[in-house]
Image 1 (cartoon, rainbow, N blue to C red):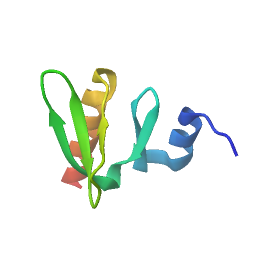
Image 2: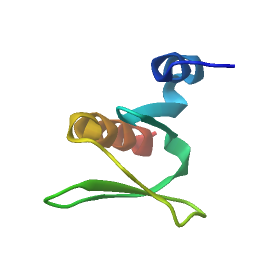
Image 3: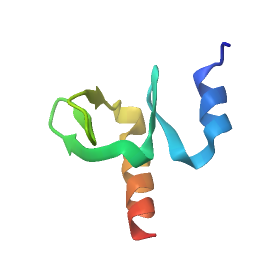
Length: 71
């Protein structure tokens, strides 16, 4: 089964979001969002892995996380 990332993003609705050209992730699993001068990283619950967010998607991700936090 092969899907394009934008198809998966649309299929799963608001729970998943694209954060770079090659990455979509589950917003419910984000533990921390850290921005430095050179990059922006996401850390996950119950995982040692980190994912980098592109500058293009950073503002949209931050807004979406703030919106979800207020509900």
